[in-house]
Structures are given as C-alpha cells and as structure tokens.
Length: 201
Image 1 (cartoon, one colour):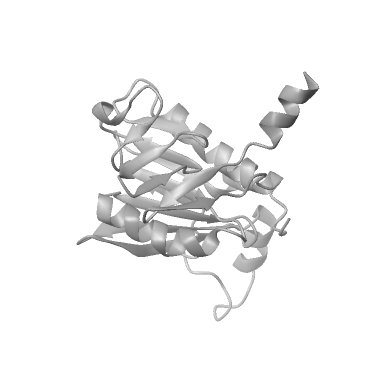
Image 2 (cartoon, helix red, strand yellow):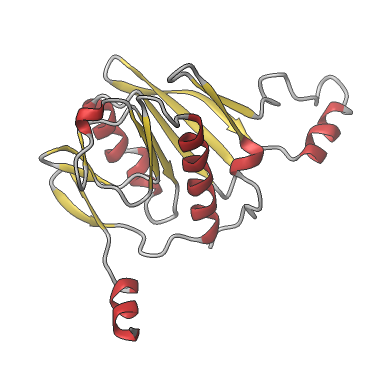
C-alpha cells in the first residue's frame, strides 16, 4: 500500500510541445487545484445533457503528432474527438491555470499550438492576481478579448463609494464571464476564486 502510494506520488507528468517532452508541475498548489476544479464543475453542471462536454485536469489532448497537452479544464463539442483514453484534436474551450514554472509556455508555445489547432476560446487563470484572461480565435490567432479581475463584495462596495475618477467602470466591475456554448451560461468569478489566497506557493 505504502509503495503504491509512493509510486503514484512520484509519477512524472509530461506534455509534448513542438515535438519535445517537457515536465509538468508534479504537485500543483492548492489554489491552482481549487480554481481549476471549480471551473470544471461549473462547466460540467451547465453542460449536463448537452452535446458539449466538460473534462477536468488529467485528460490528455492530442492536438497533432507534435503536441500533447493536459489542460486544467476544457470543453469538447465534437463527440467524435472523445476516445477511450484521450481527446484527439482541438477542444472548443481550454483552461490553463498558471503556475510559476509553466506560465511562459502557457502564454507562448502552447497558446500558438492551441490557436493553430483551432481552439476557439482559451482562458489563462492567474491565482496570484485573481484574474482570468479570455482569448478568442481570430484568423488563426488567439487574441486577448478581456481580462476579468475578481473583486470581493467589500472591494466592490468600496470602489462604488470612490469619486468618479477612481470608480470602476461597469466593465471593470464585471464579475461574470459568459460562455456562448449550448445556449450559453455564466461563470462567476466569486465562485472560481472562493478561498483562493492570491499568494504564490
């Protein structure tokens, strides 16, 4: 039992990026797991009984012969892509929760591969800054559409009491991301970042 547990703990997780095997973070921090898990659960509940399906961390995505990734959450809308042990081809929406050791790849080589493969929407979740960057497909590129910054109810009240020069605009104060799939649904930042401490671990 102890040996089996040790083997599981020591398992090396890898991805294939541009034909090169790269190490993944073996033990994501608690905030990383909180945020990714909550996003998956929101997706899964919203898509229950619909054609699009949500998947959590741990499912391999084979984009092509040179790129195999393991997103923190994703939505797949083509059932033919879902195989017994993998997803083949580009998911419709991909979520990556940033880690200090992998953030650069998430923003560069992986983003380029996702864009080229046809991912329609790409989220980068920052658990230190408590915000989500939303990128959408445009002519073979994933272009930044908006950054959603989480504010606690207390912060929102404080901003509302500021003078006009320092008050948040309606867009800056927006705490909901709308996902335009299967009739549409909303992701509340307050749910995603609940108990997230906003510190690097």
